[in-house]
Amino acid sequence: MKKTLAPLAAMAVLSCIGSASAASYSPGANDDEILIGMTVPLSGPASAYGIACAASQAFFAKVNQDGGINGRKLTLRCEDDGFSPPRTIEQTRKLVEQDNVLFLYNALGTSSNTAVRPYLAAKKVPQVLINSGASKWLEPAENPWVTTGLPQNRTEAVIFARHILETMPDAKVGLLQQADDFGKDYVAGLRNGFGDKAGDHIVAIETFDLAYPTVDTQIVNLKARGVDVVIVAALAKHAAQAIRKIGDLQWHPTVYLGWASTSIDYVLKPAGLDNARGVISTAIAKHPDDPRWKDDAGMARYLDFMKTWFPSGEVASLSNVLAYATNEVLVEILRRAGDDLTRTNIRDIARDIDVQPGMYIDGVRYTVTPQDLDPIKTFQMIRFDGERWQSFGAPISSTAR
Picture: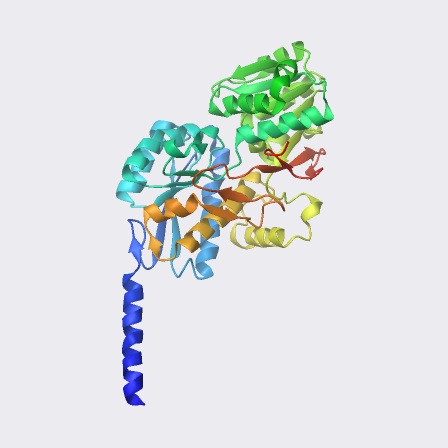
């Protein structure tokens, strides 16, 4: 009997040694830790969106208490880039060359991520689940190390157009367009969604730059063109200004607001809740104020997380909800990576995954393949009732005709 056990024990030891030696690491990973980097605007004009750092660090703390990912703790290093591409480059180089992070995660902004893309591609460092909804990230050949964590602005515009065709077939549409990739994607999406009727429906486009102090002139111009539907493709500050100005003019068009600016605290309250009443948008995630989800298991986990791990965070903040959901996707990527924590393997898994985070609306999934990097194609229509966002109708897919 002893002769039998000895070889088995030796085999077990060799198996453990072999298993340990099989682990593969790039800089930023080892047997105990996975080090991740993030650039966010903790200062400057987009600082409202910098909450993703604190929300993610709280999420990682919970994961670590629960045992980490495959026995490794997660560490997130955040650097303030002030929403300025030159600073993003500087801070990204620090994270890669001094801190030796495994990859960049959920970095905010189209221009910022574009600025660092050549550098990170040359270093073969993944840009995982970036915080940008620009369509430019959907070209696999141009973005070999990039995946986005957000629904695409162009996709939402397609859905807006189709909803308008179904509910207001004679509508005259005016677009308030941010003068960058964000705004251009809405133009392209609306034309796609309206199809051969685009020329009949899109009667006015007013552009503005992020440096503009207000968009009052643009809203006045849209009213003068006689539009009865206004689509607001603007981030928080200018979106709030647009809704407030429409109210100040005692004008009552149907307003569609891009999902990125649906925060009640940062957009609708500054705009005036009465002015925002009736505004239509889309959602991919469950909203904590929507009574539809009061008995939902995924919502219960989110609320418990916020209470226990991030009590200073605003529970109803879309930024916090999306950060939580995106962290769920990241954890699944890392879980699947196992002991192969190389940058190439992280990139490959991030570009070939299908998962439904607990805070995504039922029927909405995060799905990408190496050939199709558009992660979210189904949206839920929502309407603001003066106090909270309310879901209405069934989820709409941009691929359905």
